[in-house]
Image 1 (cartoon, rainbow, N blue to C red):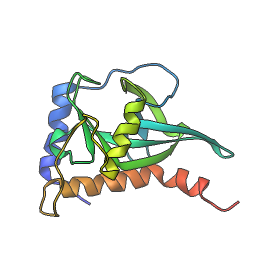
Image 2 (tube, rainbow, N blue to C red; image 1 turned 90 degrees about the vertical axis):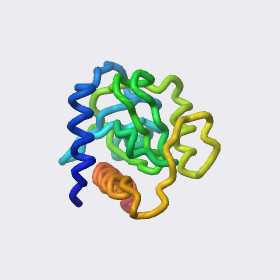
Image 3 (cartoon, rainbow, N blue to C red; image 1 turned 90 degrees about the horizontal axis):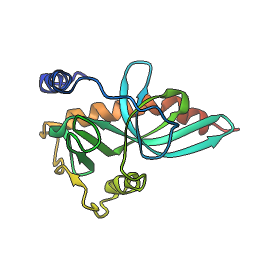
Image 4 (cartoon, rainbow, N blue to C red; image 1 turned 135 degrees about the vertical axis):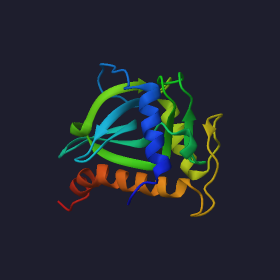
Length: 170
């Protein structure tokens, strides 16, 4: 799926305005905002829970992006300077399950790990807990629709290996 030119220009503008994130050296914990890699890309992910399995350590988390214009009602918005030097949108509807080996540097930490629970609750239409959110996507004519579709593909790609392993019959 090809992203519209508007989204490509947002990415270029973001890199020009904010540069690369600052790296924080620390063990992986709930509430970390980590860079996570797949075979084809890298993404910001808020770590929500950490699990041990016979196959190894894995985490669940929520995919993030820095594009305020693409936020919807299930996204928590953090403005530039709140968590990182750049704005960050945490997508409660883009949940990933990833191996510890996919986790890279920590670029920010939520003020409280419990904020991760509050963000995760946005997907169920729960109280917004005072979090800044976007507006609902009503239909496919909304310019954010294609972006959300691309994020869903990315979430599936990031999660596929881990999920297929931990859910495989013994």
